[in-house]
Image (tube, rainbow, N blue to C red; front, side, top):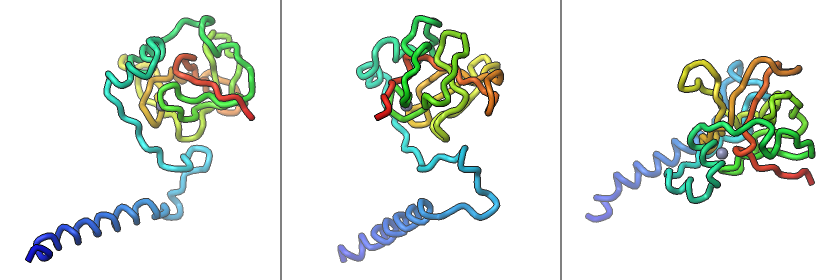
Length: 171
Ligand SMILES: [Zn+2]
């Protein structure tokens, strides 16, 4: 009797697992494929924390930029004039966002890149609706803004706050 009572739930559970499994493994139909340069290699698991948790793990500067959409001062930040080879990761969650080979000297006093690690940065309108704000794909931390006056090959300028980044030296 007991077994019969739980049986429907067991079947439902197995069905769910099966459905999730096929979703993960299914490939997009031909013709809808996105070019490799814009497609993330793997689905990014979101990092979600409460405001109190972010305050605990971030410095006040990092918190101001990543969680309150703040902007740091130009020429007085860690990476505007930084030229070592390596990767710039999110200071909030560690996701790789930019690489040194796409960094260029924009003259603005903020670290600037002409492209991102594919799929790791997303764009949305600023609260004033004018500028395109950038966020980390994994933790939604605010990174900076993107403008269309960048160099070739993309013509884009990703203008980033150093405080949103952590540098990882190339080994
Ligand atoms: Zn992040």
